[in-house]
Image (tube, rainbow, N blue to C red; front, side, top):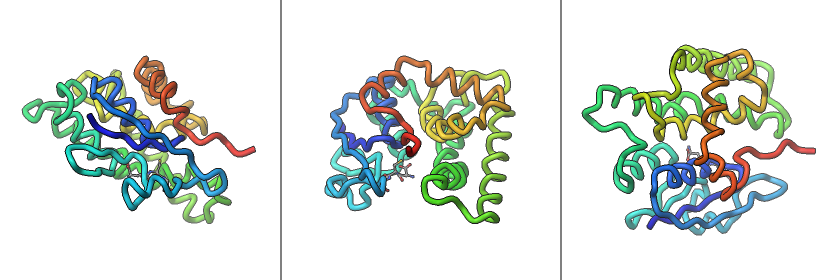
Length: 210
Ligand SMILES: N[C@@H](CCC(=O)N[C@@H](CS)C(=O)NCC(=O)O)C(=O)O
């Protein structure tokens, strides 16, 4: 049994979703964000000094990093149905997308997403990052043409990982002009596994201030 340290309004929703859809047994400890700073509370730092979510206790290791956690849990603690086997022709593509969410996507998506709550970004940097977001969404729009999922014609951990990054963009209306991204996002959040995730872990996004 793994132990998931879940922080409200956070990426650890991904691991609830993965466990629910992947039949991975888990126990969960939930933490609230600090109402002023929005950071994790000191108690999460008792599980791992970074105090980041997700943190997962698994096989004697206290593990951080969503993409690595997803890859490990799918391969070691599930029947593998939410992954893509090493000999599958789309294995390389699966790993690429699984790591893309926190890799290439992460910085520009997160910084432009939280900037409004933190007084905004300087104009030049804001423009630079928004151009990155637009380019990545345009790439995703092309990749999703005629497809329901990112890879291998099935729902995988890569879809779970990427979904988090689209929550903020959906809230900002940036999927409206990208019909494939919008259709994909709406199908993901309509899944019973996602509904269950929100029921157990609360909404994924921080509510807008005010
Ligand atoms: N790249 C890491 C990012 C982890 C991360 O920054 N998590 C956020 C929640 S979405 C967090 O713990 N924030 C609270 C804080 O840093 O105080 C991952 O994918 O797990």
